Amino acid sequence: MLILHILRDLLLAAEVVIALPVLYLCILSISAMLGERRCKRRAMTASSPYAHFAILIPAHNEASVLGGLLDSLAMLDYPSDRYAVYVVADNCTDTTAELAKGRAHVYERFDQEKRGKGFALNWLWQELEKDQPAFDAYVILDADSVVDPAFLRVMNEGLASGSQALQGHNTVLNVMDSPGTALRWLALTLMNYVRPLGRNGLGCSSTLTGNGMCLSRTLLKRYPWQAFALAEDYQYYLTLVQHGEKVVFMPAALVRSEMPSTFAQMRTQDIRWEASQGAQPKWRTAWELLKAGISNRDFVRIEAIAELLVPPLSSLISCCLLTFVGSLLLWWFPAVLVSLLLIVGVLFYISSAFFLLCPPRAVYQGLMYAPGFVLWKLWVLLAARSKKHASEWVRTSRNLL
Image (tube, rainbow, N blue to C red; front, side):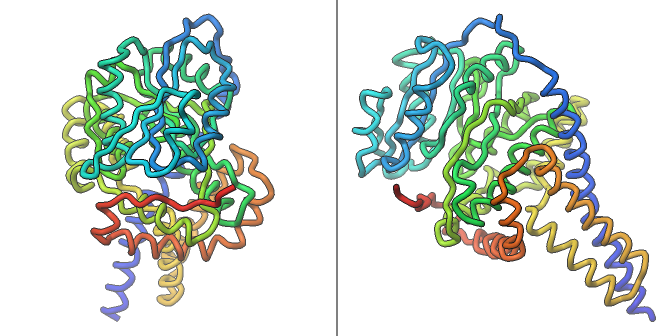
């Protein structure tokens, strides 16, 4: 009986720990639903002066996809003399630079030691500051993306409202290609739409996703880009939050990215995302945010701790199912009830993506593959612990047209 009591106490303690991130995600889902209504009621004003944008595209051997982005940028509903497109062909061995010439300003960079998006962006910013320091803000886009025609207009309104850091809605371009891309739409909608919309609704900061983000020149001069890890966007977001800045999510600034359609192609991208670490361990960053939040009485910094420590959804789903199975094995009704509530909470969070955005039928059909996708993501989490994957960027292969 003593062992049974100990096991039940351990199970209940595990359920309490799991309940914290589940409750947080449910709060964000509710806030996002309320925030989405506010966004629909809020009309963009047409009286704001046009800011001068520099659109930056770091590209490493992206000749197969860059043309689509350049085509979409040519169709922007924004005065053509108020934005310029810059491509940094970073250590390219293909025709990326040649493809972009005539359609964008092209800077070629060759540095085999300082490789990666963070280094390329930092180098390009320095070059632009020497050549053309007249821009009001910089927009960063991935080469495998396309943007909505209203993208810069939405960002302009955000800048006009006083925001210095903006993040657009980064979603999937090829959602119909396979069950993998359909499920990726769901995952990215939760991460890149539900959560930032909910966090902004609470008066907190969105994260930066690296694609579709807009940073004012004033902000970059105050906090120079020194993020060079694989998760350079998240690292810079934490830098901003630690200094009391806030990233505002702009759901109408839509940017769609092409995603790998097979598990083999997703392997390098998923491992890179999960292996990406900041400049220091999460617990140390959380401690610094807590100290700064308390000393400055800043809820934004404290809330950022919750976002930082929320486990991946695949891990959360697995833990909920394990506690449910454990409660059945111990045949303890309170634990069974709590585990069921946890599962309902996770399902509520997932369903918020369907409530807020009407996905194509492929996403519903892709749910049949969700169990395999969760197992895949668990394997990715284990593989990502390798130092090899955490330290070196590997290009994601894609279907070529």
